[in-house]
Length: 276
Image (cartoon, rainbow, N blue to C red; front, side, top):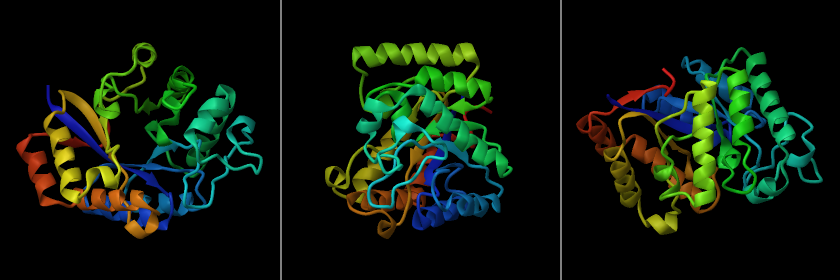
């Protein structure tokens, strides 16, 4: 087998600064995929921007807002997903405590329909802020996988979760994960071998070199098969607080000759999707 890697820039459409950086990285060939936040007010503009590059973004099922920018509203009147003002909460734990599967799937339907109505045919879906996985409370994985099967979509669920969570899952989550992987296979929903991203803050990392070295270690330890590395590149002035620093560092990494040299020396084939 061959080690293959999808390099994804998440959060297209989050706001103009992030969108600008992602479009540039796609044009430069430094990432092979991106994911679209359909509930953003600039989602259509963002999709058109990468569409000119021949890129169809994946559906980034978005059930929460983000701190530091105006809150988003769902595309469907999903009662259990919203605060009293009708906006999506910016706290995944709040969503995990109150969200109902029916509302989750109705909103996913609305976001997929939004893309298809604009001539965008995504081949896969994934979860903004990881809310569908059950890491913040309720898990909607089984319903999500059945939804993906109905719509012929691949889904970002790792066969091996350790590189994503940083260690073994607690027993209840490990059992739920095993059931979800078995269900994905039974339904014919393609999933990646593993997924990885940075989960450390700027304070924990300390400097860019630490983030770069962490990603180089992840690259070296990739298993056989097709995995996904997803990053959140942006400009520091587009994302408030320490998160902006890390996103700037990830932008820098994707253009770093040391990263590209490692891809070559590790003999990792860079691809656009884990379902091909």
